[in-house]
Length: 381
Ligand SMILES: Cc1ncc(COP(=O)(O)O)c(C=O)c1O
Image 1 (cartoon, protein in one colour):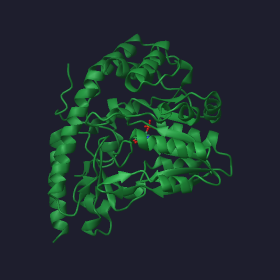
Image 2 (cartoon, rainbow, N blue to C red; image 1 turned 60 degrees about the horizontal axis):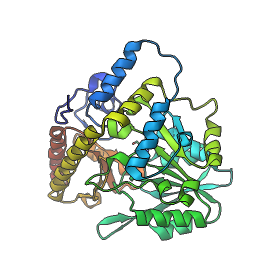
Image 3 (cartoon, protein in one colour; image 1 turned 90 degrees about the vertical axis):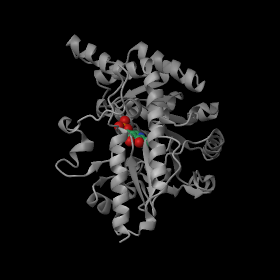
Image 4 (tube, rainbow, N blue to C red; image 1 turned 180 degrees about the horizontal axis):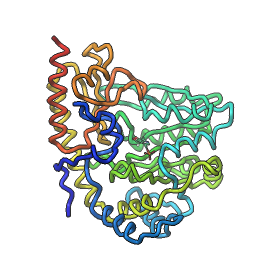
């Protein structure tokens, strides 16, 4: 059965983190990054078959799953990896923290471009490590990765570049030229790159995603790539993710701090991951067309809302809205009062913005847009 992305699904009865936040309140949940769609039928069926077996002992990644991932990297990115390069763990956030714990000595720092997914701030801090932030620049209507700022941040005790590509929350996907410059600067300054590519399968309009590590041998030598099926196939509650680490020393350093603390992916996570990557490309393509439709609908609507500007959306289902011109004292509170539960930009490092999740049936998005229009016209009076 193909997924009908237009169908609204009740999530309130499922202890959904996204919906629980505003339980019993008339506030549309447009915040945390999961979608309000059912996962592909092939994933649901694979999970049902696995549950039917009835024995749920300790489990590990199968050779079939590793081969699926090796083949996927070759087909999608012409990137040659080996099964032994794969490390599985329950969630990309754990991977960000493992990078900071395993790769940074006490006096060493991570560097990152902002705004960015907030666990990028927390991961170095959790390990008592310094984080040097530099802002993305907004030029000619698009966000640019500021190479000069990266160069300046890379000197001294900097050791780890934490890169988010595709970018949550700004929706950019870095080009090969940008990635080549980032890799060059990293090589010159001997930075390891932690490349969070969890949104790699959500690039819109047929643009390519290019894994940082696939840029060159030098990039592969110094990059830890983090990926997961969770955003694309809506599996976040199953906690399954993986790293690709071609340099054995980096692999060892990444794995060392997990001992006794970060366990394995649970068996349903593995089952879903295998089905999603092996059998759901058609579903993913349909999803992308649906998200492009939602993105276009939202950006057209926002063009007609004075005081709000939406960043160009190349990837992800997370729109980054500049609301500064509205002159609000407390934008998150204002929008909640108006029935819109978006993520505060401050979480990501820029309080002029709000992040709106449009991974939902169109009718839900239409409701959100109607509230946004009403909210802005009330703000003006
Ligand atoms: C860039 C990025 N990394 C990681 C995650 C979360 O990953 P996980 O749920 O696998 O820990 C998210 C979720 O929104 C994300 O946007």
